[in-house]
Image (cartoon, rainbow, N blue to C red; front, side):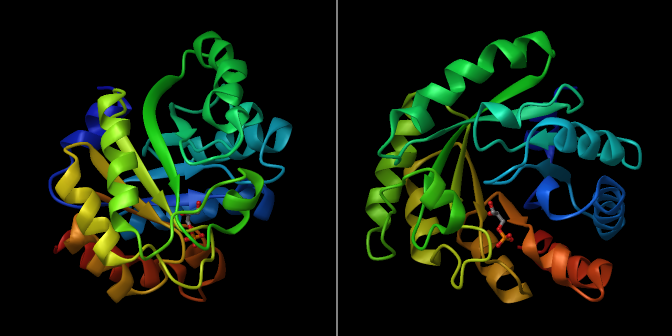
Length: 244
Ligand code: 1GP
């Protein structure tokens, strides 16, 4: 089964765990992935906005693959985020960047490596919502304001018409406020493709509300890095998402 068909076959709402290789040693990343798997997460995403490539990325993916059966999906910020050791890659375009490099440039540079390494590409639109965090700054995004849910919906519909099968609404890692529910609802109304929501989701209510508003996948990253009781926190959030 491809990773995409696995993701699409998950009944109801799902959870993905994001691990940034720059934030811990590979062994610790593997521990996070293993705890997340026990807590019920559906897949592991690996990537980050800064220094998430090369040897550290390769070693982190390999360490994670060593402890889990879950798919490991790359979440690259540019062509340096491609690793031969992963199962799949979110082949993404930051549609609301001001810089063509983040829309098609890095993709052009990375594509031959995706092919060479036999990675499964999963086409995805990446939309940066305010405040956008490091991803928004690095990607030179024209951030979508909270007051304009229809703008996000129009981008998402364009993504669907361009053939993308996933759209990621990103508030930025560690965002003070996650993507607003009205925006998730507007995007849900507009498109049939899978909706992923991430950035600043760190409690049960924020996660469950966005699943209820129409997100198919909720991503948490920072939460697993900082939580005292990582597994316990994740279990609570994942069961709340899955009950929606
Ligand atoms: C960042 O959306 C992800 O790309 C996850 O954000 O680290 O805030 O969970 P957090």
